Length: 475
Image (cartoon, rainbow, N blue to C red; front, side, top):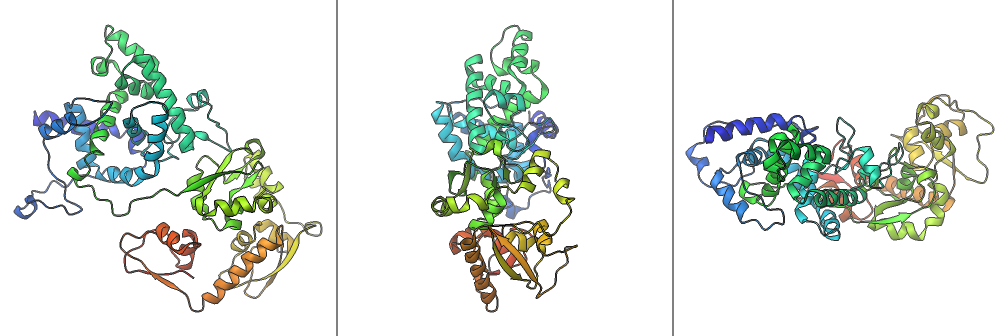
């Protein structure tokens, strides 16, 4: 029996290699060195992997409160072993992400009168990554193919891809899985059909002589589907028993509270981030369906998610933002042509490039400035800066004066004043000492107004990794 299970574990690992579950993930081999007497005693340190038996797992599964009950078998047990021993890093990763998506999954599934446990399917599909893309073109948390996504009214084009929108794709997935359940009258068969298509499940039923349950038609299903449902059931067990398998999260990821705002116009996310002080990474995280950081005219009525801490400010000043966050004609051309080289190769011209009805600011170049950062700070482009100042290259020097034209003088003055305050503060910088459990995101929320991106720039950080006791410049 043990030898048979061991073989199944190895087979499970090989099967997983070909599926979206491990795309972009490395397999971590388990160290098989013999345990010493000290480590045999109960020890719940981070690296400790508790032992467990088939019988213990079977009892726990039988006691689970679920609308999708199942019985343990060797195939499911092999995947439980995989997720708790052989690839613990993958399980830790999805545990870190679950609080971002599970509450929304649970609400949507409840609205459709579906079992709460269907939420675990997204772990098998995408590892809870809304930008996940398979080799065959499936996208998003629920890995919709284009044709299936369009069947459920998901907008899919080069500018916007709703398959990567967490809420819209989850609603579509709930509708699709529910329709498959009505078709086959069995949750395991519905999940199998979600993976390989209802046509392949019907074929398996015919080839089995009319059998109607997953394990009865198991041998007639595609190879990937044979491992798909056991993976799902293994994850149902594992995420209910994380403490039993000593999964400890050092840095859990928390969702960003947000509100939806409709601008009803073309929109440049970078401009919105610059004008509001929102971290562009946060905007992208909240709006994964928006490609190229831009909403074109054809999708102008879609809602944009913004951090809740900024939503009132944006709503109250939306009219002021209207012009400033529009796509420039140059960037609109880039979108329509889907070719960034059009803008990049456009030569800078002089004379007629000075904008009318805009406010001129004279900016003095400081240490560390480049044209890109100056353009971003003032809500314009490098091409415009070069044209306004007759620059033939991107080279600038400290003390050089640059003409900058802005669309919203009051707002730009506020940004400039804030920037000057930061310059003064830089002489005697304020610092923050990292506490246990801190992350850059949590620190930015504590400081109220300082973004993750700003903290990283102030401290020359290339990653989000920090450690307790580390001192960070915050202003």
